[in-house]
Amino acid sequence: QQQVKQSPQSLIVQKGGISIINCAYENTAFDYFPWYQQFPGKGPALLIAIRPDVSEKKEGRFTISFNKSAKQFSLHIMDSQPGDSATYFCAASMVDYKLSFGAGTTVTVRA
Amino acid sequence: DTAVSQTPKYLVTQMGNDKSIKCEQNLGHDTMYWYKQDSKKFLKIMFSYNNKELIINETVPNRFSPKSPDKAHLNLHINSLELGDSAVYFCASSQESGASTDTQYFGPGTRLTVL
Image 1: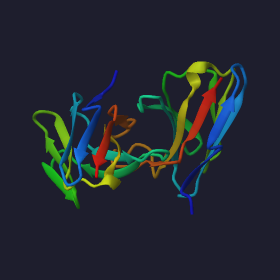
Image 2: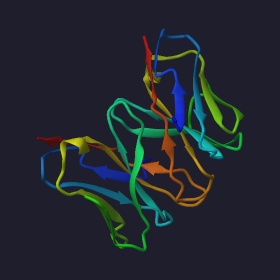
Image 3: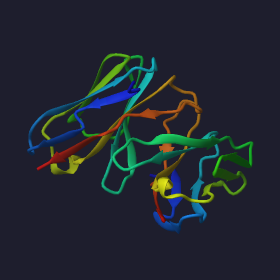
């Protein structure tokens, strides 16, 4: 049973546009929400992460928005660039528990 | 310096064979993992070891057996390979087991193709 639901499965955005990926979870014991980025042929790598006591975290062009009451969080990629084309995984973790990944979103940025 | 390395990168084999994938991390981490990524890119954890002890063992056929000779290495041995085992297998490591904020560092993956 997947503990973190992620959508969309894929998206295409023009260069300079905004990419938005949404995730939802049920288990309120989760206390850390990282996003991993995976380029073709490579392993996933941590991109950005947030704790549920913060509603937004921004690092460069990447922003996580977190809605604790709705149990939802999202990744916004501003000014999307071709180099951002990758698969993005949201995840959730808690103490003494494995990291639960969403199903992934493949982002394609067209030049 | 490669933080988490896996060998081989590609593995093509016949059904019924036995094969191993090796993983090494030079980050000094205490915890290592094996993940399976299927053709739809879904990442599924298989095993986790902390200081050479098994701490996570998901519902994985017992044809899969992890072995950790020391905390820097976690190998995956697969017996009697089946077509459905074809996937990309990722090794990962993190600093300590149990902390929710631990970052997992992934290796480059091993693409296993069973013919």
